[in-house]
Length: 188
Image (cartoon, rainbow, N blue to C red; front, side, top):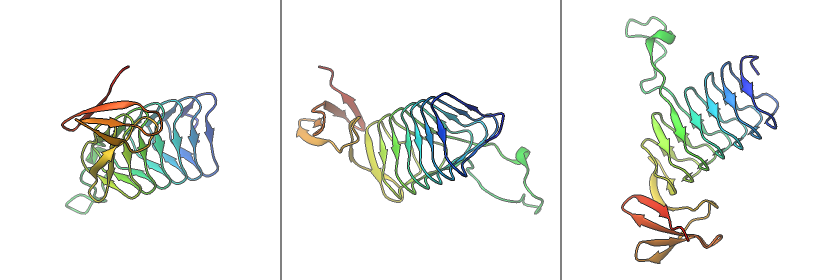
């Protein structure tokens, strides 16, 4: 861990993980074995970043985000090792772009989020998916490229179609209403 990184109380960083300078990790997080947290990455409270996940700058993970084993959050829209004249690229030859993951969202094992994208609150990206466009809140996406295949509630369980644009969580019994590609929890 770089001495310039800021890691809040209650956070555990496991063996072989690398946390770079100016990274900020919130309270009560877990950073798994061999994970890489790049310089300037911001991680909220109560996040889990599993073994060998790669989180590149300038990613932002809000509270309660789960990053599965070996998942990758990219940061370069046009990756090249060299310039057209074959001189090595330097930090001045590109501008990093980030992945933003809203609160409670989950990224499955070996999934790749190709920046710049935003993953909505409580969304789930299936294992092995490749995300190349924004994912709405509560969406369940899978495939290459990732497409919405359903909806999930805050409990992470796929919602059941209750008819008339309503969706119900089989675990919490919460109800959601769909309007196009937007899902909103119905407050009781």
